[in-house]
Image (cartoon, rainbow over all chains, first blue to last red; front, side, top):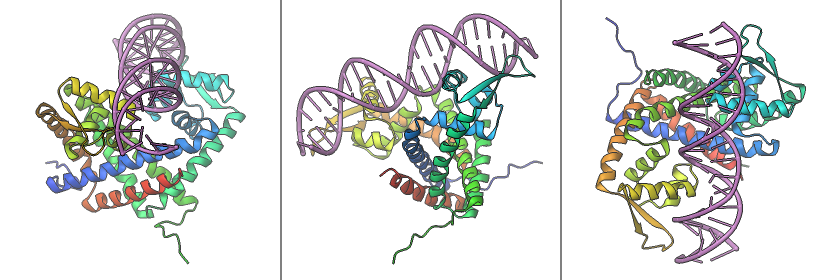
Length: 157
Length: 157
DNA sequence: GAAGATTGACGAGTCAATCTTT
DNA sequence: AAAGATTGACTCGTCAATCTTC
C-alpha cells in the first residue's frame, strides 16, 4: 500500500499559515520584479528581455521553444523579441542541425557584454535579498518550492 | 556604532545558492499562477479579479488606491475593473465619509457568494502547495520573504 | 501642490491560424 | 498528426493627462 507522504497534514491553522506564507512570497516576487526592473532600465532591458539574456548566458544554443518555456512566455512573444535582439546585433540565429524547423540561438560578443551587465544587476539584487535568509533557509526554499511546482503542475492535468 | 545584521555573509557560493533558490520561487510563482488561473476560469475570473475579490473579502470598504497597492496593479486598471464589477452587481461604490475624492468598496451579497467560490478555489490550491512544506518551513518563508520585501523596497529609493 | 479617481492612447504579451518540417 | 516558428488580431494592463478634493 502506497501512501501520500507530505510534510504537512492540512488543517485550518496550517491553511492560514500557508496562505500567509504564500502572500509573503507573492509580495517578495512583486517587489523583486519592481526592483529588478528599476535597476535594469538604465540598460534598456525589460524583465522578459533580461530573462532571455540570462537563459542564453546559461544555456547557449537554446531554441525559441526552450526560452518560451523557461521564461514562462508565449512563443510568439519570444519570436518577436528574438527578432529585435537579432536586428540589434545581440543574438545570432543559427539553423539547427538536428531539426530544420528550429533555430539555435547564441549571444554575439556584443550580446554577451550586455548580458554580463544585466547579470551584474541581478546579482546585486539577489545578494541583497539573500541577506534575509540563512544558508539552510535557502536550501529549504529551493527544495520546497521545487516540490510545490511539481504539485501545482499536476493540478492542471 | 550600528551594524548591519544579516543572516548571511554574501560570498560566491551563497550567491549561487540564493540565485537557485530565487529561481525556484519564480518557478513556483508561475506554476501557481497558471494553476490558479486554470481553476478560476470556470468561475470566469482572471487572476487580478480574483485578487481584488480576496482583498475585499478580507478588507471591507477598501479604496481603489488600497486595492491598487495590495494587488500590485495600476490604479487605472483597478478603476475599470471595479466599474465592471459594479455593473455586474458584485460590488457597490459608497462615497467615503472622510475623503470626498475616494470610494469605499463593498461586496454585494452576490459578490460575496462569488468571492467565497473563488476563495474555495484558492484554498484548494494553497492546501496542495502546503504539502511541500512543514509548519516551521512556512514560518521561515513568511519571516524571510517579508524581510526580503523590505530590503527590495529600499533598493528603489 | 499632492493625492484619489477616471479617461484615452499606447504597448507588451497572448491566442489562433498558418507554414514548414518531423 | 505533432511540433517549431511566424504573423496578425486582440486583450489586458500601463502611462500620461485631467478633474476633483485635500
